[in-house]
Length: 214
Image (cartoon, rainbow, N blue to C red; front, side, top):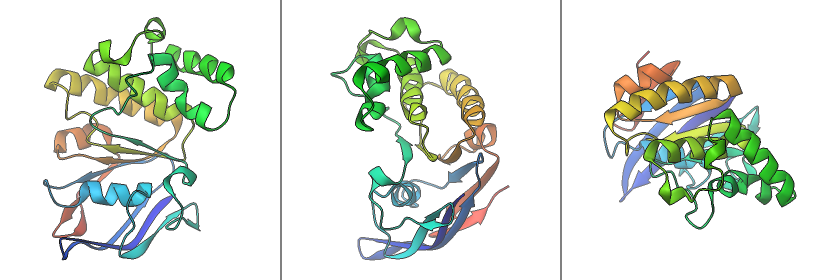
């Protein structure tokens, strides 16, 4: 279980997050909503370890991980711009995390090919990522995130760069694949319809504090 306890953060000398408390259970998808500038991405970065809170702690499975660097938390973070490596082909993008975990490159590439097969992307393995459509790039990004079997998945507006029809198709696919992986997931979005389609539960940031939506 992912747990935030009394998280606070400032921006430009003013309170941005105040007494934020949240639990995300194993296998649960929780949506975090709020207008631009409300602190959604900041909170996600605190969970990921990319920012330190001015107060409060981050816990996972009963362990305080507030002081752990991002690479030791075992979380996967997906951004709206996909963040794929343009100098690597599709297969090597998906294999990257395994190579970083010191798996031999040959084995990493084999597992990447198997993961691409799960997503129906085997035929794209040798393609350059910049030649893919937006939907294909986002599927590759999810395959790359899931292949390392992260302890939690953090999604930051993952579909905002895509057109409306593709967003609808991908959010249903992502939900089914995340549920199949049993992944603890925190989804940041400004789109209530996206939250309802993907999440088991939703909360909203209002004046720096969390309010339950459903």
